[in-house]
Amino acid sequence: MTFDRETASTDALLTDLYLDALLAGAVLDVVDGIAHPDAAGGPGPRLDPAARRAADRLRRDLVRVHPSFRFEERLATRLAEAAVALRVPVAAGAEGRVVPFRPSPGDPLDPDAMVPVAQEVAEGLLLDARRRPNGRPLLIGGALTSAALSIAGAAYVAWRRGRPVRDDPMARAARAVREARLADRASKVLD
Amino acid sequence: MARSVLGRSTGPERAASAPPERGARVAHLDRDRALVEAAQRDPLQFDALYHRYLAQVYSYAYYELGDHHEAEDVTERTFLAALAGLSRFDERARPADGEGASTFRVWLFQIARNTVSNHRRGRRRHPEEPLAAAASVPDALDVEAGVATRDDAAAAWRAVGKLPADRRRAVVLRFVDEMSTAEIAGVLGKTEGAVRVLIHRALRSVARELGTGR
Image 1: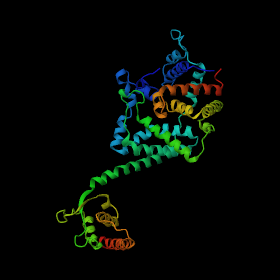
Image 2: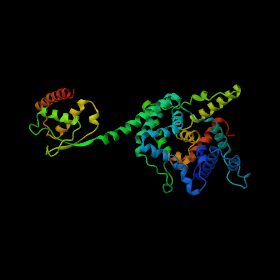
Image 3: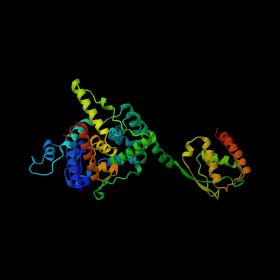
């Protein structure tokens, strides 16, 4: 059987109207009016009876499936955890402060200079930008709530970003040694 | 023939809340606005949207994949993605938007549809077999009638399972999730007219399959 475009659209529209009424649990005579327009008061396009029977059947037999309550509870818990995680960055950001930061001007390459800085950050002190005239702003918020080592790490990263990077093997070796020393001293200081 | 998207209303939920006046007809498309705004302000409030749509999303995934475990996996990914992206969700259900007006449910099912597609790509096979869960239809007290009901349901599910994917999807969204044609068009990325034709042809195929076409 072939349908021209207009006939197909009309049939589809009638079916759609019937489904609207059927799925809304409409009054029976409204449904019957769509299905049998002659009885409803005049000639007109008639709903395909096969489509109507199939719709009635699917309405009855295609049930909505609910997952297990165990799954429902587990996913609810997972979503709640994710929701809390979504809130955390806001809270941490609200706690963060802009800290003018620069290592000791005495010897900028000396990692020993990082130790007092790490102490100050750990104590939550806002360093005086005028005392450190070339300071770079650094946002430290969540880092303060993390492990003590990450405080020293944050300080070191901020200091290192302010320096031109040498990338020869000797410099890399020196940096590795300094990192180790820095971590060791910071952990001793913060103990 | 074009009809107003905003005037459509199907399903018991919408039938119960359908406003009587023409000027307020947009309300059914905005029905989640308060919950969505609350969840955007406080992600913990997403819980209400989750419980409202859990069974619908799960049913959609189950009818698509035919497996409870896979449906659970898709459902979980869908809701987690929706929660993560909720701040970017922008309701567009306003009269000026006309066709394609968006609601949270349409957006959520677009995520579900993409998640199902990704899931299928991951497992590298397409479930063509009929759904095997017709046996889960609850027994009636009358054993004989219960068996008949289950047989009928199994036959109906088999018939739907044999439909081409786009028709099956449209039928499931229409009958199981009780979406309007406009909403299905939004989910599937088709025009309302195309969705109507899909469903009409699907019903004729089901009728032939079930032997109710004569």
